[in-house]
Length: 116
Length: 108
Image (cartoon, rainbow over all chains, first blue to last red; front, side):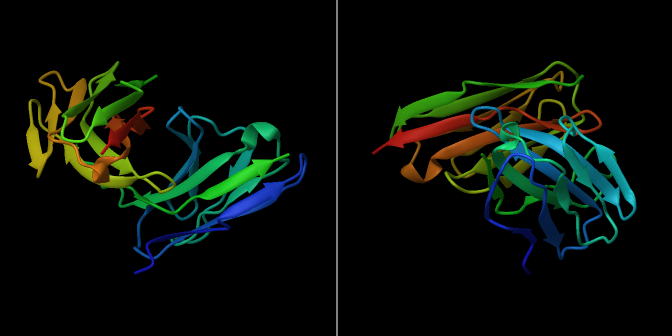
C-alpha cells in the first residue's frame, strides 16, 4: 500500500503565485487533513475533511483553500503565496473518530515550500 | 480554545540516560495520542491512551495518562541513538490539537 502520497516534495514560489499541493490516500479513510509545521511550533491544522463534499477550517486557514471531491484526494490550494507561508506541509488521514477513541493519523512525507 | 502544552522543548541526553516529556492540556481530554518524528521525516503514530490513569509500555517507552485526563507523559528508559527525534502529543477534546513537541538528541 502506498498510504498517504504527497506531491511535490519540494517547491519554490514567488510571492503572489498560486499552486496546489496534492494529497492522495489509498486506505479508504474518511478523514483527511492538512497541517503546516514551522520550526519550534509543532503541527498546526489548516483545513480538514470528514468525507467527500465536506470540508472545514482548522486553526490557521487563511490563505488556503481545499476541496474534497473524492474520498481519495484532498488538494490544498495556495491562492496568492506569501513568504509567511514558507513551511513544511503535511497531509494526514484516518478513519473517522468513533466514541472516545481516535483513529491514528497517517501522515504523508511532506512538501517543503519556500516562498520568496 | 483547547491548548496542549508540551515541555521541555528540547532535551539533550547522554546515551543510556532516561528521558521524559510532559504534555498538559487546559481542558479535559477524551484521549491522547503520541507521535514520533525523526529528523527530516514525518510524524509516526506511537500509541493512544483513553482511560483515566492508564499506563502503557512499548519496550523502553512508558506512556501515562493522568487521573484527571488533562496531562500525559512519555518516559524513555536508557535512551539509544535511535530514539532521536521530536515527540509530539496530540490531545482530543473534539478535535485533535498537537503540542509543540519535545526534540530529543542523544550523545553516543
